[in-house]
Length: 482
Image (cartoon, rainbow, N blue to C red):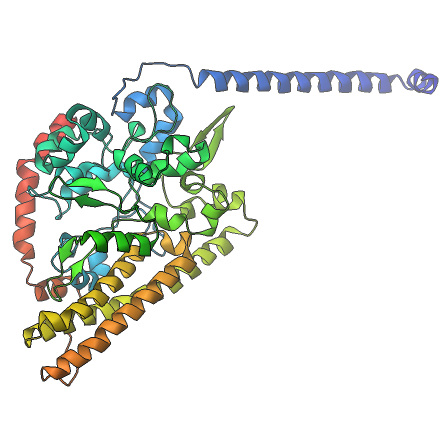
């Protein structure tokens, strides 16, 4: 201490330097403390109610007055500019890209119109405009498209909502997928608003109310991103999970129930059309097995000031790698993106192989019927085709399967290829028996228009009818929404 005092006495400027340095350190510490206090205050303020939220408030804009960060990020789902190697958020005519799909879904609405889905912001708009919806559609078709659904189910009753018609409920559907679908308006906790998921858990002997918060960050997505069907005349939305959630378990359920979504127009096969078993395939992949939830990658956390919140711009993680993949992985963005594409490429290769075989099987089966094949001869063949198409479409309809569970997807597609091969091998024998010993010529289905023409679809008439519907009905529905 004496040395320091002596030094300062000899060099007075050093004392001033120490004084100013100490003053600066105290000032910075004060700023730091003030910043912490402000951040804590911001965090507390973010949960203060600005406006009350009703028990059945389906307008996300009302919620947004209390939670502007979440609401603004949700509105960003209207941005459809992102396009990856496979899909993205841009509207893509999938039948134009892959005309084989027209033949594979012959006799079903998807052969008329099938577009790559856009963001949640467009959930109502897109289902209104697709050629697959008309006056024959049940009310069940609205279930996963709007935050008005919980209110309508509460008002009408779940069974009566399903039994109603798409047209009759249409004017009441004014809001896209939003806050009420996943959050309790009183506690803000994640909750299940669609009864089909709760009922599926109950039939398995499980109580979904015991799910952890992390599990709920996937289960709220599983309300809609799952395989389901419309049961019996009441069109009651049901998940086929009674035997389990694997592709084989759900197939066994449908076979026992003798369910079919449609009879294939060419082969006469009773087909089950998977919807989008995203949650089921996700459970079989490495990310779910390591405890990640859907929201970790599709709705990553963000921080603004002292507030941490989930980014409600639900989108492909590939459009936000820095805040999704790089949270856990240490490779570069380019390396991670290419790793995803590599898996998608390999699954796409298997999908294409399965589609080629199935298209041929359907057309060859039609030829066999035309030549006089009997039901007894064709039944085993149709069973092979049914199994093959269920497996192919299970992967195809689960858009993220090639990334969520690439090994399981490859296994399922490999089995689809085997089943389709068995169908074609059996068809050779039947065709030969009925005098057809040379190869069945394939029609020109190189474009969507040619494939639809081959099936006899009158697309100009269908489009004209839909356009008339748009002009006469949609403006009334949209005016009510506004």
